Amino acid sequence: MSPSGDTSPTGAETHDALSGRQWMLRGARAAISIPAFILTAAFVGYAGLARETGLTLGETLAMTGLVWALPSVVVLTGAISSGMGLIPAGIAVALASVRLMPMTMALMPIIKVPGKTKNWQMLLASHFVAVTAWVYAMKHLPELPREARLPFFVGFGSAVSSFVFCMTGIAYLLVERMPDMVAGALVLLTPVYFLCSLWGAARLNADKAAMIAGLVLGPVFFLYLPGLDLLWTGLLGGTIAYLATRVMRRGLS
Amino acid sequence: MGDLVAETWWWPYVMILVAGWLATDIWRWLGVFAGGRLREDGELLIWVRCVATALVAGVISKLILFPQGVLAETPLWLRLAATAFGFAVFFASRQRVFVGVLAAEAFLISGWLLLDALG
Image 1 (cartoon, rainbow over the protein chains, first blue to last red):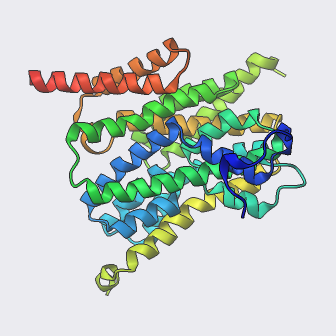
Image 2 (image 1 turned 180 degrees about the vertical axis):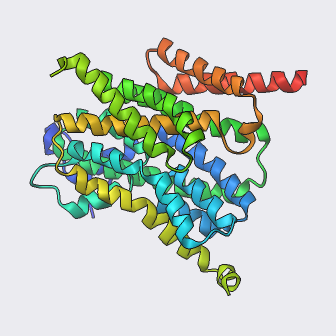
């Protein structure tokens, strides 16, 4: 409808008077960023894995777009390639995706305008919740005016996911077999990026304590309670971190 | 019978829709409903954020300690050292994520090349 981007009049507008669409465009522009680059690299790495596993291009893209959370995508790839049934595969993926619930919960009060934001808008926006966008949102959304946060997040999320979607397809078609070292380096990108940006997004001591607890407990539960490991890591690590820092903040009240 | 179903072209898409899309997005939707009532400054939200953060941190250490694919062939100490180096550089560069990530990658690749040359 309107010419997009920078041609809109800017002079008379105050910061708050930007429309939802303009905030969405700003979000999309903000998506040209390090996190998007790193996520793209991770999905390019995944495209190689999908092709080696024998998934078609259509299946790979459908998974990228519909699931939109790399760990869950990897689990589902394994399930399909090993001929797992629908129900066991669904359970495996659901277990790998539980983390999305507390992540979405934590994001809601930041994004929501009480009494104004509709539930369907939140449900749509929630599809973009995945670690990369979540970390970015937790760090940057609180700096924006409240009305701007939802459109900005949707613009950011849809821009990142469409870009990653296209690049995954291109990578699938072009990269027959990646050199080992490149593939390995792509795999390491994601955890290191998560590590640095999660620390950067931590606002309270509680967040930092939770991060350390999760780093330590994650592998322990993975070895002793595989399947449910992330759930226990989150619940136990998060609760310990919360209680410990609460005692530090307010004493034993 | 089961094999016949598994070989049709559309079966993987059913898997992706039900076992992929539904099994993933359901948690996001539950998060919307459960998070809608949280207050931005409440104690409950601090706890929820702790749980989410610890979960994501668990994903991080799993990816480093038990990686998939070719990265699993590198020695554990190299992956840990590369990550630690990246995190240290991240701090030294006044928390610039890009610099930290680049440093970790440089460390990993030089270590890998060195091991290849020696081995």
